[in-house]
Image 1 (cartoon, helix red, strand yellow):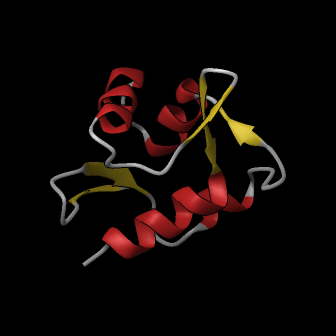
Image 2 (spheres, one colour):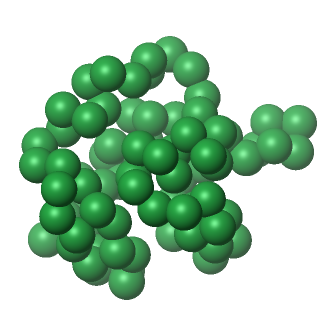
Length: 80
């Protein structure tokens, strides 16, 4: 893994390629803690990104949830 600073100032450690997403069920929504684990950042960082609208998310009955396909596309768009 290596760290990369995104165009919007988001710094994420990521593995080379998209293999990390291949293991995830694309039919479900993920929690803050689950996405933090996938992106290897803290849950607090994910919450900050949500607050600042730096990461795609949904609110389901008031709970923040993430679509892994949207996260994957977001990361690909942010890669320089």
